[in-house]
Length: 36
Length: 224
Image (cartoon, rainbow over all chains, first blue to last red; front, side, top):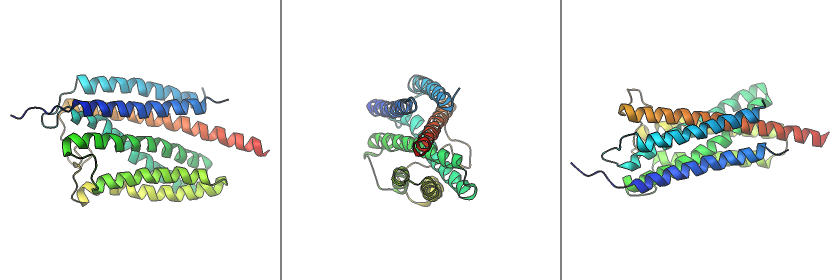
């Protein structure tokens, strides 16, 4: 049976990128809608 | 409670639940034997892809109704949906290559699915640029509606591209005519993630809609 590939770094990178994009957009919306 | 506040609350709940999706996907969902941990990118990539396509579909649908009804609420919704769709398309186009490198051995290939998704992203950018370039509100809404309808026509092509062409991209394992070919625990993680992305889409659109409304009121008071 083949070994499970060791590519966890790619998974971590994708999860970080997704969090950064979503958080970044949420903060951008918060700042834009929060203006008086 | 104002629309912007409601949107913020929904977004906040969505982000909190996203953290739980991360925990479930990373710690409580089994590792796929052949692809390894990189397969878990799927739980973010697929819901983002569905909402990137759905958002454009809704932009087009709102565009069709706008051309008949001339209701500014439809135009505001289309604008909000397009901006949220751009965010989800960005996630698709970054997580996809990150998955592709360890699995395919390349970050990118010009196959039908990848190329049409990139085209969708450019359509979103073009749509937002078009809106920013036209001052007259009714003209802007009309032109944007037409471009949105063109974008909507692209969506079925993106979904079917893996059947129509020989592509490297895997065929759908959930959104297909037969039953999903994903083990139970993986399917649950995917569905929960899809629910959270849906919540985020709703929260983003509500806030962006409120922002469009706010800007219109400011423009109106500036002209008065």
